[in-house]
Structure formats: structure tokens, C-alpha cells
Image 1 (tube, one colour):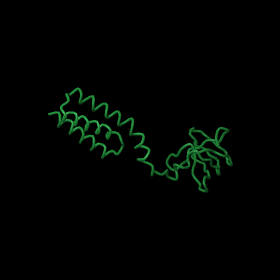
Image 2 (tube, rainbow, N blue to C red):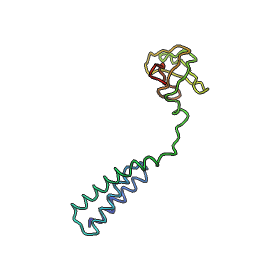
Image 3 (cartoon, rainbow, N blue to C red):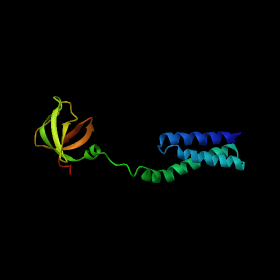
Image 4 (tube, rainbow, N blue to C red):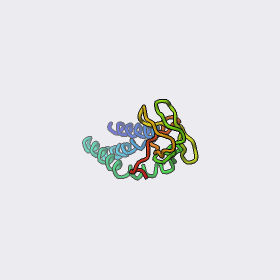
Length: 147
């Protein structure tokens, strides 16, 4: 009777993995398959649960880092993501409260603001891009710790 439970758990975990593609449940599906094999060989419930846990943890610890490394290797940063951490030149005074300010980065002009609600940065200041919010770059003045 336990055979059906391990088989159902295996199928459910595979379906979840196929839907999410997050490399989270596949390791436990392998553990369920190993526990199913232990049940078919004739081991008791406690042994099956131990086999499930041990195989799942070993698969998770030993193979997940390798799979994650190669799973998303073709993912490219978007143009906007690649701007984070780069330096830009303030073309128009930045006044976050007023919603004004423009910077130039990589030959492109962007609207910009600071993290502070009343932040101001004068024209011709070199700034570093900390993030992106909508179509505006979040910037801060460049200091000595920046390259």
C-alpha cells in the first residue's frame, strides 16, 4: 500500500517542478523514488522515510549548486540592469521632491532621482546608479569608495 503513496508523492513533486522550474522539488522527487525502491525491496516504513530524507538531502546538497550554475547561464542582464553600479553625469539638477533631474550614462539620457525624498544633486556631478524605479535611475553622488 505504501508503494502508491511514494509513487503519488514522486508524481506530485515532478508536476510541481515542471510548473515552477525552480529546481526546488526535483531533489525530493528523487528521494521519493529512492523510498519507493526501498519499499519494493521490502524495507519497513521507518527505513523508507530515512532513505527519502537522506537521498533528498544528498541530492540537494551535492547537485543543486551544479544545476543552478548551468540552469540559468544564458540569462543576460537587460540594458537597464547593466547600468546599476555605473557612473553617470548629471545634466540637469536633480531634485527628487520636485521630480526633476536628468543624467547621461552610456550615451543615453535618463530621468534620475535620489533615495531621499528631498534629495538634491547639482548639475555636472558624477553619480553612481544604485537602482532603477520605473523609468528613473536612482542615483547617489560618487565618493572615494566607488571605482
